[in-house]
Length: 258
Length: 258
Image: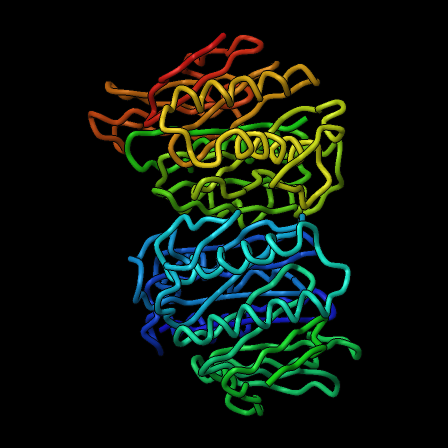
C-alpha cells in the first residue's frame, strides 16, 4: 500500500512540515520506499517532483522538505509497489492536461479489473493500475464534456460517480486536482484537519519536529491537510467514512457526500 | 529570446556539467532570468523540474547542477520572457502524453499568428506562443495518426513538416522528444557536439569549470549535446543550417534534413 498527502489552502502555503512527516514513512517509520512524488499548483501552473528512490534518503525530498514552495493545492504520494515495478514511469502523482488545465492524481490501493475498462483520449505511460484508472477518469470526462462544464456541481457530481465506481473495484483512496479544486475519495483510509485562527503548535508523529503555526500564518489563513493517517500527535484529525467523497477549495470543504 | 540545451546519449548520462554552463546564462553571464526548466527521460518515465526564478540563484537549479540524474534524453530551457508573463505555467519544457508516451517541448523564438491555428485534442494551460505551438503539433499528429505509426521515418517526416511550418512563422528553434527520439529544428541558432572515445577535457565558457570526460565515461559511450550557442571553449561545435531538422537516437544522428 501507499500513503497520500494533500493540501488545500486559501493563501499560497508551503508543505515542508507535513511533507517532513510523510517522507519519514518512505523507508524509516514506514515501508513506503518504492518512490515518491509531489505536485504543487501555483495558479494554473503545476510542478511535479518525482523520485523512484526512497523519500527518506532522497536529495530531492530533502529539497522539498527545506525549500518552501508556496502553493494553494498540493498532492503527494509515497509508494510501496504492488502492481507495476519500481520505476519513474510508475511514480505518482500522474499528470495530464484536460480542458486547458493540469490534472494530477495520486492513488492508494488496488483496482481489480480496471485494465479491462476501455480508454479514450488518455493512455497510460507506465504499468500501474493507478495511472490506468486516472486515464479512465479523464477519458470519461472528456468524452462526456468536450469543454469544461460551466456548472462546477455537475463536474463534481460526475467525478464522484467515477471515483465511487473505482471504489467498487477494490481498495481505492484518491486525491485528484484540476488546479481549482482538490477532490478526495476514501474507500478505506483518509483523514483531514483544517487549521484556522487561533493557530497553535503541532508536533509530528514521525519525526522530532514541532511547528508553531502562529509564526507562519496570517489571521485569515485557512489550510487543510489530508493524509492516509494523522501526521501530528497533538491535534484532532477527522476520519473519512468509507465511500466518502469531498471537494475542497481554498482550504474549505465545499461539497461532501458520504 | 531564450536558450536551449538538449542531450541524447546511448547510456544514462548526467547533464550536471552542461547545465552548470547554461544556468549561468540565467541571470549571470546571460539575461535569461525569467525562469528555467529541464526534462529528464529515464526509460519511458519523464520528470520535469521547473522554476519561475532565475536559474543562477535557484536552489532547485543548484540541485540539478550537483545531483547527477542519469538520463538518455534531456531537454532544458532558460527563459527571457517576450510573450506570456513570468509564471510557472509559462515555463518550458512543456509536457503532454501522446500515444502512451510523454512528449516534451522547449522553444526559442516568436511565432507570429500561431494562435490563429486551430487546435484539437491538446490545449495550452499558459499563455505563451510556444506552448500553443506544442499543442498544435500534438493535435496535428494525433489527428493524423490515432495510434503511433509503425514507420518511424513517417513520424519523423511528419514532425519535420510541422516544425518547418512553424519556422515560417518567425524565429523558431525547437527541441522536442517522445522519450525515444530527440527532434531538433533550427531556424536561426542551434549547435551540437558528439562526444565519443577517445574522450578528453572540456572547459565551460560561462563558469570556471573543467571536466575530464575520461573519468566519467565508458569506451562505448556516445553523448551528444545540443545548445543555442557552444557551452565549452576548447571543443568544436557544429552549427545547424537555417531550416535544418535533425533526429537523434542514443547519441547518434539518425536523420538529417537541411
